[in-house]
Length: 166
Image 1: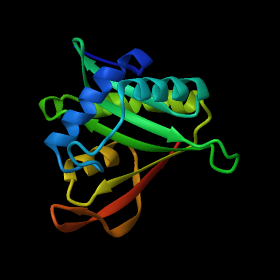
Image 2: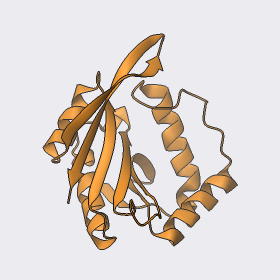
Image 3: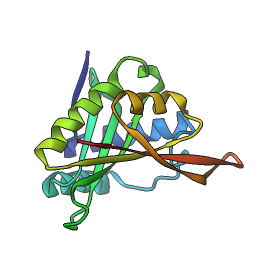
Image 4: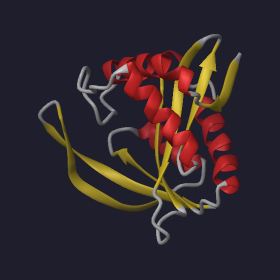
């Protein structure tokens, strides 16, 4: 059974394992395999700081005792933009199509309302139709395209900017 909850500092090792595996199994990520350089201590401290600041959140999906997906929502502290969070989401291929993305977004919206967030924003690679479909299903709208934004396997890929107001 899938459990969706906010991350805890003690999840740091599982979280590193999750995003390392995600970086290896898909090209729809910013980081290439092995490119992230963060220690377990640093990751735990980063999670703890995020929790204490209350301006950002990482929501994880857990299957038994393994993290199988996450949704990060990073906010800023400046008054003019503290109502905005920038989202990243990823789910292990073994768990795609199980409704986890929808569960993560629903949990995010609860958190966002509790923390006075009004604007959710994200980008999606133009060649990732399943993610694009999920974001549309969750109420996100296209705002624009950043052309040749990423270089993946020697080819330029456009990023689509999307947002949702809550």
